Image 1 (cartoon, rainbow, N blue to C red):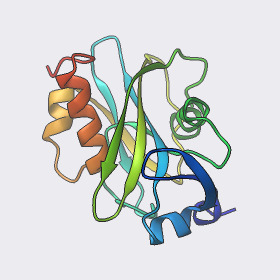
Image 2 (image 1 turned 90 degrees about the vertical axis):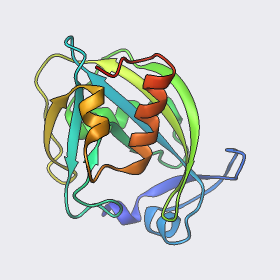
Image 3 (image 1 turned 180 degrees about the vertical axis):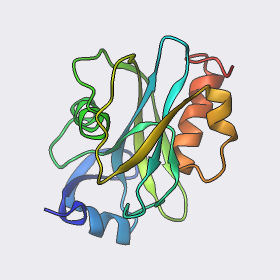
Length: 168
């Protein structure tokens, strides 16, 4: 099944589940949905920053400061975070610390995000259909990048401002 045809959990403007729709339908009509944001850091405090493929349906070729993505229909936010972390980076069996939830909206996207932190110092297995490559950067370096997915920039700024991560 193509990503556009995956079924996504749709929520209302108060983040209450109210149905499901295909990813393509959610994107086309800018429906509210849930998404996970997993910030992966190593022992040196660097973040795993991904470069998105050009085939992504939103923000193609941009830097993604977090692993994650939309929550599937009927899936919990935490389960979606675990699934996305494994799919995108090959990371499993890691403690996910839930930091906070936030609401993000712009001209292309309306979502409620759950932000998580996890530490990983081992190898990665990149999902070729979504991730071109990764680099390890300090949060400050990551926030200074151009062409960043705006929702991950907001989430990372909040992580730093709330003291979950230090910028340097």
